[in-house]
Structures are given as C-alpha cells and as structure tokens.
Amino acid sequence: MLRPATVLIVDDLSSSREVLYEILLGEGYELLMAAGGAEALTMARQHAPDLVLLDMMMPDIDGLTVCRALRADPRTAKVPVIFVTALEDRSARLAGIAAGCDDFVSKPLDRIELRLRVRTVVGLNRYRLLHDEQTRFEHLFTLSPNGLLIVDGLGTIRLANPAIATLVGLERHEELVDQSLFTLLAPEDQTRCAEWLHDAVAQHLKATHLSAYLARSGGTRLPVVIDAGWFEWAGEPAVQVVVRDMTDRRRAEILEEDRRRLVFDLHDDIAQTATAVYRQLEHLGHHYKPRRPAAQTSLDRARELTQRLMRDTRRLLAGLRPAALDDLGLAAALRQHATDLRADGLRVDLYEAIGPERLPAPIETAFFRIAQEALNNVRKHAGTGHAIIRLTHEDMHLCLSVEDDGPGLPIAPEPGPAGGRMGLHAMHERAAILGGTLTIISAPGAGTRIVAEVPLPLSHTEEQPV
Image (tube, rainbow, N blue to C red):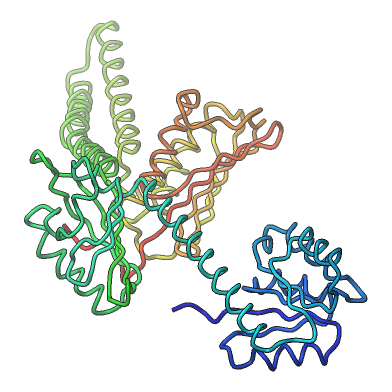
C-alpha cells in the first residue's frame, strides 16, 4: 500500500502557509510547512516530498534560488515544484521555468484550481516514481545471476527471469510461467518443497530456505539452495523465490570429504605402519645389536628416517584435516594450528569471540583453510615472526582477520592467476562459495591484513536436510 503523498508548503508568511494547509487538509496528503528557503531545502532533503508548493518571493532565499538548488541536488532533482506567486508578468514566469519549476498557481488562490493542479502533479509524479521503480526492478530481475521467481500461494509460477531458465536447461524463461515450481525439482524433493512453501505462506515468513535438486532437461540434476520470502502480489499472497546454483559449493564439500577420507586412510594405514616399523627397528636394535659399525649406522639411519616419516605424516594429517576441527570446532583448530606454527618460528596470537556454539561445518572448514593459507603466506613471504588472528561473530556475520607486521605489499594483489602463487584465488573462492567476501588490505611498510566475512544462517531459517 502506497504511503500518503507528501506536500511541502513553503512561504515566509504564516497566514499564506495556513491558507494552503487548510485548502489541502482534506485531500489525504501529508502536509509539511517551511517558513523560508533555507528551511525548505533542509526539509526537502530529509523528507523527499512528492510536491513542493513554493512562494517565489521570500526574504532569506528567494523561490527561484530554492528551485535551482532543488534541481542541482540528486536527492531532490526530480521533486515537482509549483510556484505560488502573485507575479503575473511574463519575465517572472519565464524565470520560474528556467529555474526548473513544473507549474504555477496565481494568488489570490482559486481553491478548486489549486486542488486540481496539486492532484494532477502528484499523480503524475507518483506514476513516474512507480515507472522508475518498475524499470529498476525489471533490470535487476532480468540481469540477476541467480534464478528469480514469483509464485502464488499454490506454487504456480507467475514470473521468471532468464537465469532460472538457464538453470533448468530451457531457452526461454517465458516457458516457465503458469508451471508449478515443484515440477522443476527432482521427484524426491517435490513434496518436501510443497510443504516448505505452504509454511512460508501460512506463517508469512520473510526469509527461509532449503537445499534441493533441480531436475534439468536432459535428465541431469543440479544442486541448489532455494530462498523464499512471503509478500503480497496484486493483492494476493505470493512468494519471492531465489534459486542459487550450489555446484561449486557441493564440489568444495566433496573435495573436503575426500580430504577427510584421505586423513583416515593415512592415519589408519601409513601412520600406523610407520609406527610399527619404528617399533620393530627399536626391538631389533635392542635385542640384536649389530656387530659391525656400518650395520649400526644403517640401523640408526633407518630409525631416523622412520621418525621423520612419522613426523611428516602427522604434519600432513594436521594440514589436511586437523582433528580439533571435527571434535572441538574452528577456534580450537586455529589455536592448535597456531601452536604447531611456533615450531616453524611463527608466533600467532589468536583473539576469538564466537562463543561455544558450533558453526555450520562448511563455514568452519572454509575459515580454517583461509586462515591456514594466510598464515602460510605470512610464514613464507612476509619476513616476520608474528601474526594475529581475530575471529568475531557480529550481526549474523562471521569475520576472520589475519594480519602481520611485515613490509606489506606495494599493490594489493588481485584474486586471479597473478595472485595464485600465494593462494589468494583459493581464499577468494572459499569465501565466495559461502556468499561472503575476502578483502586484502596492505600498503608498503604497513603490513598485510586479510579479512574474510560470510553471513551466518538464522536459527529459524537454517537449511533443511536434503
């Protein structure tokens, strides 16, 4: 429902302001009054009125100057202006037109004429604003990289953008209009999505989402997250739907699952075998001491190599998937990683304020990998023995900062191939997959700071399991 139109009445004479106020009082407008040009400019910028009724002759700033100032300010440039004036000469009216006014009303006032002129100008301005808003909406709707749909309370598609057609493998998005949203999904997701959409409409939920699979033409399936929010469309309950391709995120999850399996295999096979070999060598050296010095040297070398294999395997396991990340969470894993880096000569101070509650596993994994890569850059490239990690949780966003006091970078590197040698591209991708951002702040002599920020799901809108 549109708010009442706002009319700003500007006149230095209180009697004139009161007359205009009384004439328009019963027309359903929100009426504001300013006693001079300076006050009018301030109020116009604050309230963005739908119309300014402006006296041409005022002592502080005259109406022509006020009108030109309104037109020069992007915030008020399109606000209609009607001059209310007793001046009838042609030159005054031409000056008003040159200043940018839209119409004139002569004093003494004709009440009917004033009401009709105000009604006409306000109506045209409202139409223009709605047209501009619709144009912006259509532009964003059409160019959005995500699939966008408007569906009614039963799930019938009323509007679709080109991106959703691409996601389901159609050439024309118009083909989706009047189809059911649920037919776009894999069969096993259709009933669950229908129940979820029904709850969104019944409970007037503004933000809710779930994971599902789109059934694409050709028989393939596409992992997606579907966001939905209830609103009214043409006076009827409807739902705005955003469909986001989760292919990259799913690939990252699969890669992380492969890492986890590799960790288990290394731990259960390579690490255990290396430990058994070392114990056998210790047993051999204790019970069957070599008589020749060369044999003893070979045995000592074998034990040394086995110990190195055990150390390298432990380090590899920690790098692939630290046990603390699965068992205790992100903060504990970062604290353990910081401790491990002390052996390499890097002192890492960790400041965290995220509380004891576990975060979603994809976020914990991504943030650990980002911190891991950033600290690796510090160790290899920054030329300093000190780094600081800050981990905070504010305004439904998780923020990770890794900074050093090294010489800094002459130019902050881009996330593309040029920055690939420092893993910046991978860090950017990890943040982007989660809908977040990664920023690099650096200057010569001022160190480098890498900041990753991702949104956290609301407790009542967490993804429902697939």
